[in-house]
Image 1 (tube, helix red, strand yellow):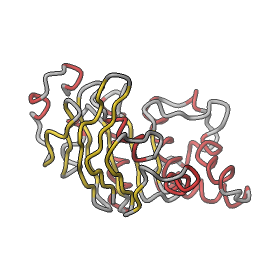
Image 2: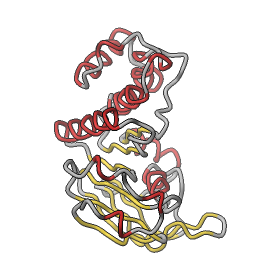
Image 3: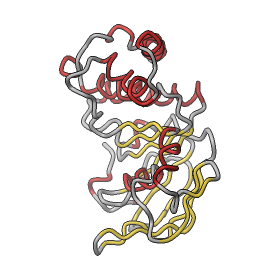
Image 4: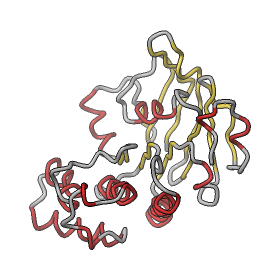
Length: 238
């Protein structure tokens, strides 16, 4: 479960979040949408404890993390997998090495066990034939799918996706969306997707949160014309 209670955050002179409250139940998949600079990605940083609110409370699995010490936050972060907008793969590592990086570096897992788990994870996600490829040999959509595999391999309880379809052609974007949906459905991982490309997700999620002027202005079922409610042209889906 993720719960924000009266969270306010100001960066510089701009109030990014203004008394924001919402709850995401365990196992739920939601979209978080809004115009450029509306605070969508900031909410992901708050969930990870990378940014602290100036007021309000944030609960992850009933633990209040807003005032939590850094060493305790490390455990919270280990329970979260994040897929960055650009994928953030290591260019000098193969797909196998990228996906297995956390297991090897953070869990000190033996090479044989890392290889076994990476192969199983890539097979589960339909990527097993790309073990020895480097990121430069992959398409944009494939990089995003590998980034999902890397985030999911540690069996997180929460998955966070920051614009997972950005910059992809419609076919590649739909494959990434299908992967996110399949992963959520089969493993029941609590999942938060930050996106402005709502149309790809309309048939995959049951709930959407919209941010505008630092506040939640909509919390309900996704609808195809919801972008018309938002005046920012960067928000409009194609």
